[in-house]
Amino acid sequence: MRFLTLIELRDLDKVYKTGKLEYQALKKVNLNIEEGELAAIVGPSGCGKSTMLNMITGIDRPTAGSVTIGGERIDSMKEDRLAAWRGKNIGIVFQFFQLFPTLTAHENAMLPMDFAKKGKVKERAEIAKKNLELVGLGDKLTNLPSELSGGEQQRVAIARSLANDPMIIIGDEPTGNLDSKTEGRMFDLLKKLNGQGKTILYVTHSKELAKKAKRNIKMLDGEIVEG
Ligand code: ADP
Ligand code: MG
Image (cartoon, rainbow, N blue to C red; front, top):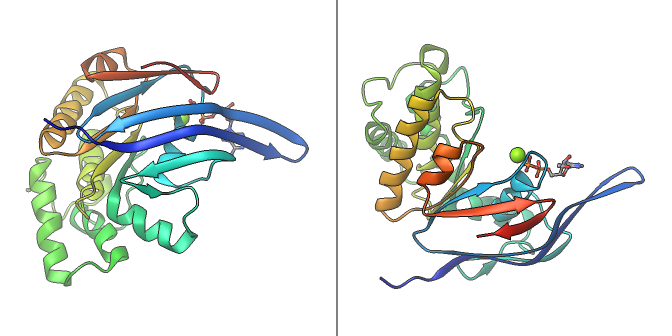
């Protein structure tokens, strides 16, 4: 198999400024993620894991250094182009799912396509249905989030992250709110997606979940110390 560098962080600094206070959350971080990797990011609370993910998704920008994904410089991309780029190329799964409470599972799973104005509405509905079937929720299309368990809600969030068939899936503690059995099932699902070619990067506090990843990237005080 030929591996290509998909995500490249070079000498990445992030300094947060709050009034007169400055806090350096990332210190000259260098990282290469190859296409098709499944990697876990671990480290104590406050060490900069979410900050680093936010640099990769372009949710926030670095103070210095570069973020190159699939050959494109994300850190210097203009805001509207960046939003479109993110919607197309990155699926994001959050700890608290962030589903719209008034929309059904099916409607939630369609949203990224609606934002991207992808294809016809009928096609969006078909793709969302297919993705919900993939995560094992084909029989819960019309359920509201409140009518789903935590694990099911997270599966809807994963189906939603797949909407635009992104090359990368990013999870910030995606199983942080789930019991260990549900967490295991969630990992199996991520592994299946990885097997289908998705590059997957997730933050976890779970030793079990970290052990299952092929690669662990350890962070401490704003630096990558291992992996
Ligand atoms: P982790 O995800 O590893 O728990 P974060 O990346 O969220 O850590 O935060 C790293 C450090 O940066 C922490 O000390 C946190 O308090 C600080 N930090 C994060 N976001 C901000 C912000 N928007 N403004 C100021 N400080 C922040
Ligand atoms: Mg975090």
